[in-house]
Each structure stands twice: as C-alpha cells, then as structure tokens.
Image (tube, rainbow, N blue to C red; front, side, top):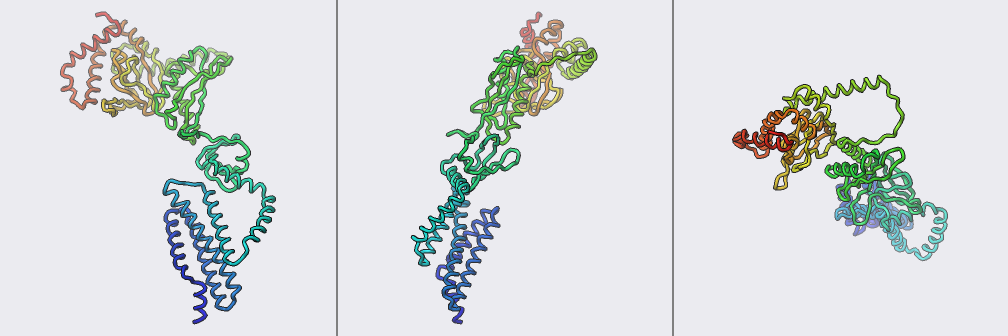
Amino acid sequence: MEFWEKTIGFFWGGESLALLVMVLFVWAMLFHFRRDERASLVNTVGFFFVCLFGQFIAGLLHALDLARAAAVTHEVFVIGAGVAVIRLWGQLVFRVVLPAVKLTPPRITEDIFVIIAYIAWFMVRLRYAGLDLGSILATSAMITAVVAFAMQDTLGNILGGLALQLDNSVEVGDWIKVDDISGRVVDIRWRSTLVETRNWETVVFPNSQLMKNKFMVLGRRTDQPVQWRRWVWFNVGLDIAPTRVVSVVEDSILQTEIANVAKNPAPNCILMDMDNKGYARYALRYWLTDLTPDDPTDAMLRWHIMTALQRAGIKLALEEKSIHITKENEKYEEVVHHREVLLRIKTLRRVELFSQLTEVELRELAERLRYSPFAKGNIIARQGDVRSHWLYVIINGDAEVFVDLSNGKRRTVRTLGRGDFFGEMGLLTGAPRSASVIAKTDVECYRIDKDVVEELLHNRPSIAEEVSHILVTRRAELDTALQNLDATGAHPDLSQQRYEILETIKRFFSLGN
C-alpha cells in the first residue's frame, strides 16, 4: 500500500486534474470546429496521454527509490506534456478563435508563436531543474553559428518567408506571376511558397527566390477591389473608320451583363496599330474581377465583338492571299446563294406582316435581308429607342421581351423563339420601342431595314393598309400583357386605331393618298 501511495503521490499532483480537464476541453473544441484536422488532434492528445503514462512510470521509479532516474524521467515527460498542451492551445487560438473574429493569419505565424512558446517552456523547465541558463546560451550560440553556416540556403528560405509575412509582399489568396508562371498563392511555409496554376499544377517557389527576384502580384491595387486588366485583340480593314468600329464594339459590350467583367473601370476599345498588310489592329481592354476564368472570359468577349461587328456589316480582317477562283467555285456559290434565298423566303412566309406579298416581292425582300447575330445577354432592342427603324425575324435562339416600369421594376411580357418577329411598329411608323428585347441564348436574326420596306411600299402602296390591321392586333396583345386587361375592353375602337396607324405609315414613308 505504501508503494502505490508513493507512486501516485509523485505522479499525480494537485494541478494534474485541472490540466487534464483543460486538455480535454481544448481537444473537444478543436475536434468539433476543425473536422478536417481530427487525425492530427488525435495524435496530439495521444502524445499527451503517453507523456502522462511516462510520468506514472517516473512515479514507479520513485517508489522503487530510484530517485535520479525518476527525476529525469519525470522531467522529460513533463516537457513533452507541455509541448502537447502548447500545440493544442496554438491550434485553438489561431484556427478557431482568431477566424471567429475575422482574423486569418497565415500558418507560418502560428508556427512562429508556437515555437517561441516551446523554447520558453523548455528554458523554464531547465531553470526549474537547476541548470545554468547562461552557460547553456553561450554553448548554444556557438552551435547556432556552426549550424547557420551549414544551412545558409535553408535559413535564407526561412527568413524570406518571415519577411514576406512581415511586409505583406504577398498573401494567401493573391495571384502572382513569376517569369512565365502565374497562379494563386495557397500557402506560405517556412521554406517555400505554394502556388496553384490554372492548369491544376502546384508550383513550389523557395522563399529566397521570391525575395531575391521580382514577381508581380496580379489584380492588387491600394484601396481598390481585386481586378486585373486584360486585352482582347482583333483586326478590321483600314477602309472602316476607327470611330465606327470603336462605337459598335463599346455599345455592345457596355449594354451587356458579362460575368467577371468589371463595370468600373468600364471596358473600352482603342485603335492600337495600323498594319502594312491592309488592316487596323484594335484591342478591347477590360478588367477581370475573378482571375481564375481568364481565357473563358476572353472567349466570351471575342464572341460579343464578332457578333457586334457582323450586325454592323463589318468584317474581321484576314491576311490576304492570292486565290484562283474556278468556274466550279462560282457555280457552287450560286447554288449556296440560291439555297439561302429559298430559306429566307420560307422564313418570311411565316411572318404575318408579309403574308400578302407576291412571290416576286418576297424574293426581292429576301435578297436584301441582313444577317444579324446576337450573343447571349445582348440587348437587341431597347425600350424608348427612336432610332431603330428596322424589324427582326428570329431564325435561331430565344429572346425575352420585357418592359421597365415606372417603379423601377422589370416585367417580362413574353418569350420569342424561332420564326417570331419584333420591331414592326418602329419599322413601319417610326414609333419609339415600346419594350426591350434581350437575348436569352445566342440568337440569329434576319434584319429588315426601313429603306427596303420603303421601296416595297412605293411600288405597291396597298400593302400599308394590309399591315395596319396586323399592327393594331399586335399592339392590343402587348397592351393586354402589360395591363392585364381584356383585349376587347381595353380597345373598344380598333377601326379608329387602324386608321391612325395607316395615316402614320403613310406620313413616315411619304406615301400619297
């Protein structure tokens, strides 16, 4: 009985229970909040209990009157238990408490404080054991000098990592470019900095390399949000005025919501060069808000540029080559053109406005249609616009008709698909657009301009009276959708409206009575 009393008395002090409860509490907190680090926590707590068992062994040695062995064993395992406790508290403070108050210091900061605590604990225990710290420090200084000389590169990397953290040159989450490698910083360690590229590669940069050589931090500017300027290049022939190219491209981009493209600063198009090969080189400059999808965003902008230029009848410039055209090529082009015209005639027959046209009139109209593609998100028509005197016929894709209400809200009127048309009031009467139309998908349209219809009406004025009936019906449908009213109740006098629209058409196209 006396043997076990001596063992327990040496092993279990008055503070042991409080220490055990504290360790279990800290471990429980970390185990709950840091699910991804449970294996490491189990190892740390396991090490703590091993140290407790070691102290129990020291108690057995003490009970056997092996005082020196008991003291050394006890001190070793006390130091080990203290290391485990310091590690647990370091994880609790830096990985639970500080993130809870919106502070996320890098892992290297935690390591520094924990190591300092380890050294302090070790020195306290040595002092408690009765060792002279002065002689130990003197010996340590000599050993440190030798080790420092032998580990110059490693120490350079460690000091470089500390310097990067202290002066905030680079932070976790920053995008950096070193030589021809760019990627996002995911961790700053003692010896190296880890950078993940867009190609799913992890590049390990020695910290000394980052300190000795220049590198770029992408998208970072003082007191500004993270955004990075990008350039999208394209070529247009010198026969097109630069002001027109710039206007067409900027109008299209600025009116469209494109993911990851900053509104401020706004994208802008500029003339960069004039080549002796016969074309001008332009660039659309924009600011990327998410640096990960750089190429996909460039591709989306190229598509918007291409469709905007096509709608305006502007061709992208290609390198000129001498090509010999044979008669077979000419015949093939004639067949393709004839097939395209037949397709256009078939499309026009589905448009109610042109149901009264003869075969000859339909063919003339089909020859003069303009192909107009729109990228997803483009505003095809804008409510209140008084300059758009043309009509669109959708041949592929879907578009949405909506109106902006006086209370600032938007109401969707209907969805348009293949074969639908819109813009007839602006084309035939010059009236402002009563609603806006936006491309829900990539949309392909045929566009009919005022001059084409004007020539048609002058050749056969009776068409004006025929289309006026259709316009009244279309307007009644739109008003019903907007006001949620019965069409008959909302428009009791359709004949009067037909007369007014017919007179408006005649005035707009200068048709005689």
